[in-house]
Image (cartoon, rainbow, N blue to C red; front, top):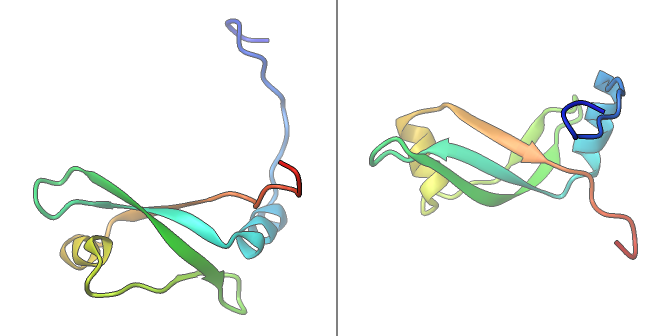
Length: 86
């Protein structure tokens, strides 16, 4: 316990990260708004290539695509889908 917060020490391997990415179906894509540079986050569908690279389908109508064309810096947050009943 550190500062009133319970912490759990756990290593996270690349294999586990790839497995989690393969199981994910959705994610949050964060880009920089081309009008002002503020963060812009949106829900996206996620898949992976055979090599395990994340793939997202984007449309030129979507704000995140317009943002990425203006500034390619972005992040993708994915999480494992919840177990049944969660």
